[in-house]
Length: 306
Image 1 (cartoon, rainbow, N blue to C red):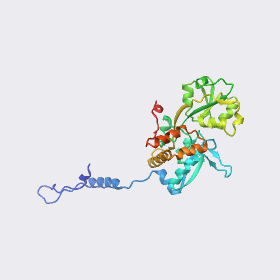
Image 2: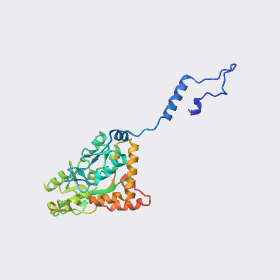
Image 3: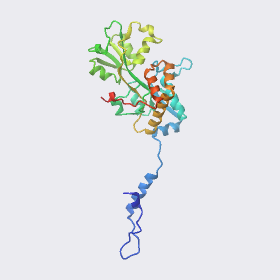
């Protein structure tokens, strides 16, 4: 039904009478309903409304896990790369920031249950996550897996894990390639600390988590504790786009976050934060250069869809 049909036509008159034709009441009701819908103002999605009403943005981050998260000894507050990204989004919204430390086994449930508004927690794009969550399509990083092994393990490449136990975080996207491509026996743990403890205890032959965290473990403040361990290989396992996640249907929030990420790349702010916190910057630096030409990556990449 076109909008024109909502008005009676002056050329239509009943035969033998001067009275103009009037549409039935049901047609008037339908027209009124349609016009009301069309005239209704557009509303922001539920997340943006909630954030602005309460004056606070709640963001789930990985917690203490250098180089992405660290505890500020002066304040006792969680800080680091992920928190700084969350602070910038909150500042742009003109609200306070609430940081929530999440773990791999429950972080998706935290987002779905509304305990956090966003996840900035080193979660790469996967088909499985894409089926239940939404995300800002411009990646803010590209991260793959790294494997810490004992120096005398004889493990020097991913293929050497066949038949051996690899410890990962519960819900890790490294589980599938470790099992299906490299034939490893995978055991899931609550997080990186538990996995590394299992490695030292001999439960697993390799601890497999995001490459930057594994590299930092061997070279950071606790390096002395890991003198008998090394990275099996510098080849990262399934490098994938790291994105900011949100709930389904929150298109306004998605657009705002995506525009913010693109601005981080274009301005060089993301690169500066990576250098400040010791986050490997190779991908971020190349993304910054492309952004100067108005070019941005968008998840998923073609390789992720295969």
